[in-house]
Length: 556
Image (cartoon, rainbow, N blue to C red; front, side):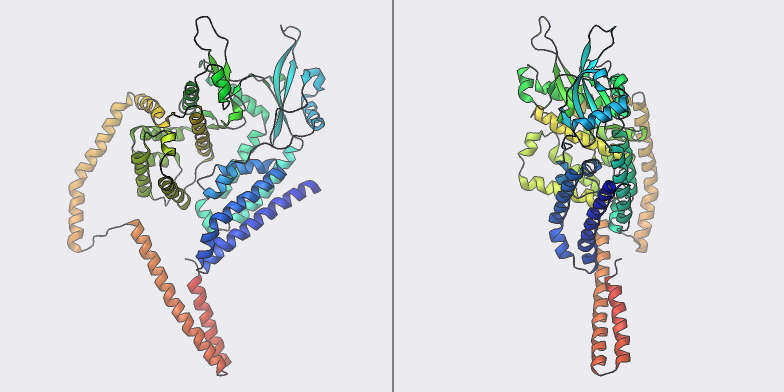
């Protein structure tokens, strides 16, 4: 490891060491001393400060650290909202690399000077990101082509990215080992699994051959879907670190003025965008996981005779981040969509279990109540209607569900995190295009389609449900008999999780209070014997007091 990479490695370790010392003092040591007040009061500000300092580090170091910030910003299931909110604005825009260095990488990868492959290669990049940057060019075509050249965009990886990736991942693995020593973090987060997920997705993202294959797979899935377009990949000038794509001159999906000027209905754009994602998820099980405005465009088509407005295409670019849905997860997503369409909170929780997002210890009843409240209060509301709700009401709901997610053992597989993040961005895009866009009602047709696809199995489903009902009905007399017997014997127990936890905490506090009284008595005795000059008994009682103190403050 060269001096440059060693310095980078040490800087990452030093940053996270300070973060863990901060968390250890305020969130572990003070509560261990039964002094939670100061830590709790400052917690949100401290977490926000940590996220701000990480943003500064990420922008300065670039490379993997920006990807780490973006990855963490989507982990609402394992990180406090103060951190994810701060990191959500971390952009993948960094200072452009010198063109001479980009030329060196491109020519080394392609094996020829750029002038032999391209009739034009613009030195000023169109976009500059942490892993690579994009340049417009004109690809030189063979003599048998009707054209002499063709407009393309060339994505070239920054120099030394493989070495930076290895350095940063090595540092993160060390940090992951440190984090594993914090029990309260281990309870909520499977850190090794997160590192494996992040490493895998990062290696895929820096492999431009993989991105090109993703683009062609996506294009194949939409081959019979006239309203979607994916730029062509030019494999003759594509390698692991260089990607050449057709340059599609189109309107950015958030450029509302140009979309309106082209005579395109923005409501139709929102609906088509939403429909394509439903197809990606529920039909293809493969989805574009980074639908930010820089990766989505609207391309007006030529006006045909008799048309009142031009046709248009929805254009997808940048397939470095994609997600797949496994067959098991597909069943869970299908269950989830049907549950939303039918407003069934219990079925939503069942879908969570099928998706594997709930760890042992999750409070199922609390989740069902939360789902029911969301349906009761927000079902059918558009984004503007939700926005017009009182801030106090919205804050109360958000606070309740934030605590629910953060406090419970709840960790989501990475591909489902990508999906949730993707749908969150998608919701914002659709609402921006059409303020009256209603995701609730847009889900309805897909829910009906999925129910219909259970198809010939619908009768089987009803029979299965009937069988479960019959089984419960026939077992009811026996259960009633057992219940009556327990009541007669005085052995009836009512289990309420919140009450049980409260009683347990009360018992612990009583025990600690008793220990504190014993500690005070022993310590006072030690002081009295010391004042009387009996050092032996003073030492004995002081030792007993110390042992009692350890017992009182030792976490259980």
